[in-house]
Length: 113
Image (cartoon, rainbow, N blue to C red; front, side, top):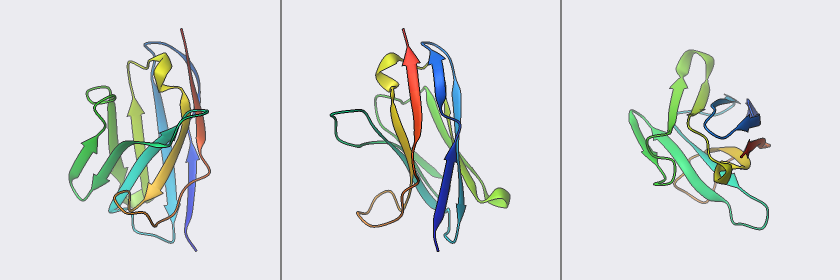
């Protein structure tokens, strides 16, 4: 059974930082990604890590960092210099480059002006 447990969301002022965590069980974390979805908008790609390679959406490049801790079977998303447009529910996903895989329950990130 695959389970992804996300945490770390919250309310932060513009320019602040948050660190999201995704602890996985029942799956490899070699290839993992973060997506986000704001109300009324489609879910969009944020960041992914596959082996030692990372990839970021242009909108977050230079501000967000994805990483993993194999010992803890966890992936993280460090979010710095947050902007109001970053407000969304953030989801952890296995195999981010394919349509199949597992999703976490999501964690709310709200950035105020």
